[in-house]
Image (cartoon, rainbow, N blue to C red; front, side, top):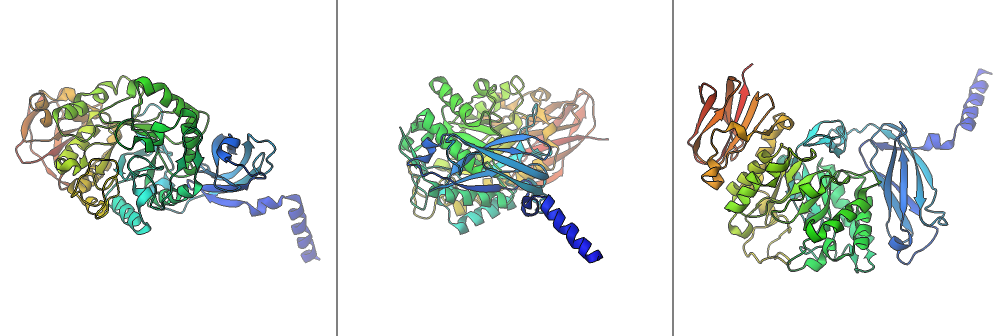
Length: 545
């Protein structure tokens, strides 16, 4: 009798609760959730005939997050999303074609559970820009120091074995972000499959098969614990091959359509968006890029967004008030001469950072190692250390002239100056500068770097005023309990010590990644440092307790 009562109770429970409760899909927090939809209609050009396909997600605590869905070929449509709360989520679609029963007013739900991966992106969450801060952070507030490698053509050209080798190397050498291009552009007209992202200009056609390769490559970036920074619209407005670059040749409406499509495909990944690549975003093109940014990102939930400007250009003052713009990216370009060195150390970033809205400042393209066979590891180190100390510390990007085009033996760089003898990508990842940016990353990660700010006033005199490439930048905590200076050449410097603190001093060798105790002479309110050895060094002062 008791057994019969138990069975009766069990069947009553099944009848009282929806079947979906027992069958809901489980999705790991900070991982990609994907749902597929079958359109009830066929369209000649779906990206125009369905001009809105959005999904509204409701979190367990009632937050609403709106993201784009996308066409994936034939009658297949998808949405990708990254849940950021544990518990039950629900969603509903809305489509501009109200009569499409396969896309409009569809609903669903899933359960978000803990992630079992120990990788930072799955334990700490997606990258954000905390309001009022000069750095990026994971969702839980843990600061994120951007250490990127430039592989513009990596997703477009690499084989599975090549991509695995590259990502393993970058991860093992303290990189945490990969910059890559997601469409055809002046440096690569088609993928290794012979496909382009889109064709046409006045009215474009998008090719989902092209993007399935990029899907795989970005998924693999995340699987190594790395963040991707996809360039959505390459935009260089001059030079050979510019008509291949969608950010240059597409009208605004078509640029927005393509950009929304790319955002929809990769919004479920760990990304930091680079809306435009190598572009001019000011003067006659300012309104164009502001409109593209507004139409693509305003009104949806999205990862941090930046622009990658052309060489030695800066857009801080004209973009700081754009709601969608989160990160002050700049490009110092590929030159070790006085103009570029002074632009890094004494230019608009160094002068503006404390006058504009707080944002991370990151040199997204300093000297490429081996470019024109005039940039070596010392130039890479100089540009990298100068850049991170010119503004509040936030990050740096490395590049090599054989990595970004994904050069193999016997290949030439498309639409760029021919450079016979340029090393392959496989050789270039082991260049001294490549490894030494990894040392920089390790050193910075062993400090509470987000608490340091530029402190040029601490130097009694600036060697860079006499010899441009001897510039010594200094950063310090606000209470001066810790100071770091980068000394690119042998010299004697004096550091002001207005609080008469006693410091322990340590030399860090950017060439070897090794540290050793340093000697200094304190006289009154000044500290004398004699750097008499060859090469560049970092000196760290920590107040004695």
